[in-house]
Length: 187
Image 1 (cartoon, one colour):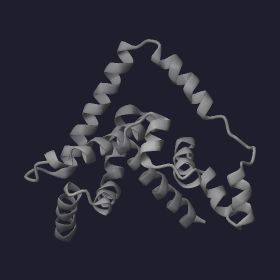
Image 2 (cartoon, helix red, strand yellow):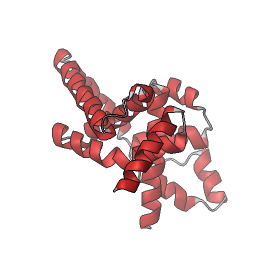
Image 3 (cartoon, helix red, strand yellow):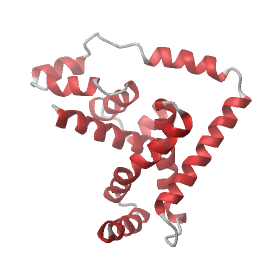
Image 4 (cartoon, helix red, strand yellow):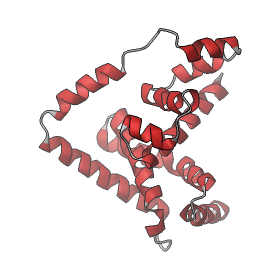
């Protein structure tokens, strides 16, 4: 327990200096805690996942403000709780939000079975299995991997394309890679 606590403290210090591996360690260490907390609050997997991504994005953006006298997990949970409250307020203030969200979800849930140029190239290079694994991801993670690795976009270009902050892009890409690795390990 003490070793993990020391590693967490070291990772926080490294993350304050911009170390991506430290960010990844903190994300991996606390993802399930934050996601579980939000799943209990929202009772909705998509909302819980979105809020969790926003939590880590905001935490990593503001990590230099973290006071190490306190528990990092408590700080994350406070950020997460406040983001959930903001979401509830936003939904209450916008009656049209649910209709817009329903139409957005319908668009994103339409599977694209047509092979793309990337699909053909992957098959030619004997990477068809990887593509099958990618397609098991949720559509927004598929999109992140598609934009970053197949279209070779920078974080900034992806941020502009999906109209989200760069930190959200980084966190979503980290999560997409983690989920893809889990799917591959299972096979």
